Image (cartoon, rainbow, N blue to C red; front, side, top):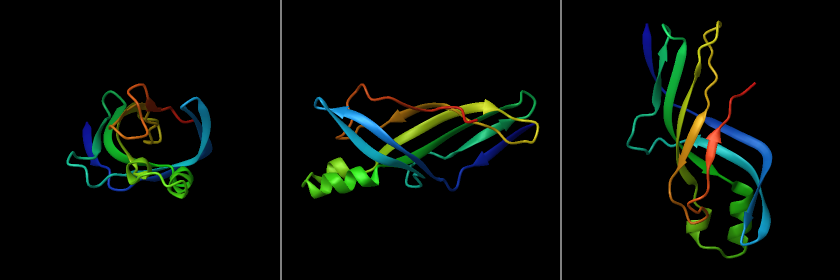
Length: 127
Protein backbone atom coordinates (compact mmCIF):
# COMPACT_ATOMS: atom_id res chain seq x y z
CA UNK A 1 0.00 0.00 0.00
CA UNK A 2 1.29 3.46 -0.93
CA UNK A 3 0.05 6.62 0.79
CA UNK A 4 0.89 10.10 -0.51
CA UNK A 5 0.95 12.95 1.98
CA UNK A 6 1.33 16.72 1.96
CA UNK A 7 3.58 18.61 4.34
CA UNK A 8 1.59 21.64 5.43
CA UNK A 9 3.46 22.97 8.44
CA UNK A 10 6.98 22.78 9.79
CA UNK A 11 8.71 24.83 12.45
CA UNK A 12 11.92 23.56 14.00
CA UNK A 13 14.90 25.03 15.79
CA UNK A 14 18.42 23.73 16.15
CA UNK A 15 19.24 25.29 19.49
CA UNK A 16 22.92 24.36 19.40
CA UNK A 17 24.92 27.24 18.04
CA UNK A 18 26.40 26.71 14.60
CA UNK A 19 29.90 27.92 13.83
CA UNK A 20 31.21 28.88 10.39
CA UNK A 21 34.46 30.18 9.02
CA UNK A 22 34.25 33.21 6.74
CA UNK A 23 37.17 35.27 5.48
CA UNK A 24 39.54 33.42 7.82
CA UNK A 25 37.44 34.28 10.87
CA UNK A 26 35.17 32.00 12.85
CA UNK A 27 31.63 33.21 13.59
CA UNK A 28 29.00 31.89 15.95
CA UNK A 29 25.71 31.92 14.04
CA UNK A 30 23.52 31.15 17.02
CA UNK A 31 20.48 28.89 16.62
CA UNK A 32 19.09 27.81 13.26
CA UNK A 33 15.35 28.18 12.60
CA UNK A 34 13.78 25.96 9.94
CA UNK A 35 10.36 26.77 8.51
CA UNK A 36 8.36 25.34 5.62
CA UNK A 37 8.54 27.58 2.55
CA UNK A 38 4.92 27.73 1.42
CA UNK A 39 5.78 30.15 -1.38
CA UNK A 40 7.66 27.46 -3.27
CA UNK A 41 6.11 26.44 -6.57
CA UNK A 42 6.83 22.76 -5.97
CA UNK A 43 4.64 20.59 -3.80
CA UNK A 44 5.84 19.84 -0.28
CA UNK A 45 5.06 16.21 0.38
CA UNK A 46 6.05 12.62 0.24
CA UNK A 47 5.11 8.97 0.05
CA UNK A 48 4.71 6.18 2.58
CA UNK A 49 5.40 2.83 0.89
CA UNK A 50 4.15 0.29 3.42
CA UNK A 51 4.98 -2.69 1.20
CA UNK A 52 8.67 -1.76 1.34
CA UNK A 53 8.46 0.02 4.75
CA UNK A 54 10.05 3.19 3.22
CA UNK A 55 9.08 6.83 3.58
CA UNK A 56 10.29 9.57 1.24
CA UNK A 57 9.69 13.32 1.29
CA UNK A 58 10.75 16.43 -0.55
CA UNK A 59 10.03 19.84 0.89
CA UNK A 60 11.11 23.43 0.54
CA UNK A 61 12.32 25.24 3.65
CA UNK A 62 13.63 28.60 4.79
CA UNK A 63 16.74 28.51 6.99
CA UNK A 64 17.10 31.50 9.30
CA UNK A 65 19.87 32.49 11.67
CA UNK A 66 18.07 35.24 13.64
CA UNK A 67 20.95 36.12 16.01
CA UNK A 68 23.49 36.29 13.19
CA UNK A 69 21.10 38.33 11.02
CA UNK A 70 20.67 40.82 13.90
CA UNK A 71 24.46 41.10 14.20
CA UNK A 72 24.85 41.67 10.46
CA UNK A 73 22.10 44.31 10.48
CA UNK A 74 23.77 46.11 13.39
CA UNK A 75 26.99 46.15 11.36
CA UNK A 76 25.15 47.72 8.43
CA UNK A 77 25.21 44.69 6.15
CA UNK A 78 22.94 44.70 3.12
CA UNK A 79 19.61 42.88 3.20
CA UNK A 80 20.91 40.19 0.80
CA UNK A 81 23.04 38.89 3.70
CA UNK A 82 20.24 38.74 6.25
CA UNK A 83 17.57 37.04 4.12
CA UNK A 84 16.69 33.41 4.87
CA UNK A 85 18.48 30.72 2.90
CA UNK A 86 16.08 28.81 0.65
CA UNK A 87 16.64 25.06 0.49
CA UNK A 88 15.05 21.82 -0.67
CA UNK A 89 15.31 18.78 1.59
CA UNK A 90 15.23 15.35 -0.08
CA UNK A 91 14.77 12.75 2.61
CA UNK A 92 13.94 9.12 3.16
CA UNK A 93 13.88 6.56 5.90
CA UNK A 94 12.25 3.43 7.20
CA UNK A 95 8.68 3.21 8.46
CA UNK A 96 8.82 1.94 12.05
CA UNK A 97 6.47 -0.56 13.72
CA UNK A 98 4.46 2.25 15.36
CA UNK A 99 3.97 3.90 11.89
CA UNK A 100 6.37 6.72 12.69
CA UNK A 101 9.38 7.37 10.50
CA UNK A 102 12.76 9.05 10.73
CA UNK A 103 13.81 10.89 7.62
CA UNK A 104 17.29 11.98 6.59
CA UNK A 105 18.99 13.08 3.41
CA UNK A 106 20.66 15.85 1.42
CA UNK A 107 19.59 19.47 1.46
CA UNK A 108 20.04 21.49 -1.73
CA UNK A 109 20.88 25.09 -0.86
CA UNK A 110 19.77 27.80 -3.27
CA UNK A 111 22.30 30.56 -4.08
CA UNK A 112 22.67 33.09 -1.26
CA UNK A 113 25.07 35.98 -0.60
CA UNK A 114 26.45 34.23 2.51
CA UNK A 115 27.14 30.90 0.80
CA UNK A 116 29.74 29.74 -1.66
CA UNK A 117 29.64 26.76 -3.98
CA UNK A 118 31.29 24.58 -1.33
CA UNK A 119 28.59 24.98 1.33
CA UNK A 120 26.77 21.70 2.01
CA UNK A 121 23.87 20.74 4.25
CA UNK A 122 21.97 17.57 5.09
CA UNK A 123 19.44 16.26 7.57
CA UNK A 124 20.98 13.53 9.69
CA UNK A 125 19.01 10.59 11.11
CA UNK A 126 17.47 11.26 14.51
CA UNK A 127 17.69 9.03 17.51
